[in-house]
Image (cartoon, rainbow, N blue to C red; front, side, top):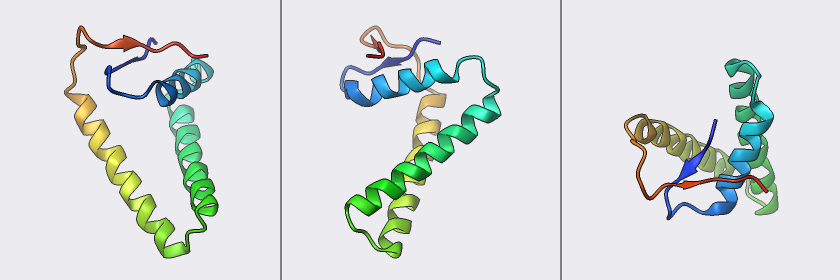
Length: 91
């Protein structure tokens, strides 16, 4: 599946998503969701360790990230392809 992005969305995260999309191709959706969830959890943990965050700060950040995920799913549910969208190519 081709991935497109808004012109104002950064290229680097879009390229990572496209790479993950390529790895996930052909796998069951439930396996992709589990892998993506684990990637998200690991990323939160690595970021928290890098920033030397305590448990409370880490959980607050995780809640914020989860809220952003929910908001993004809700926003993308109604999103239509735009002529200004840019196709993402994985490096």
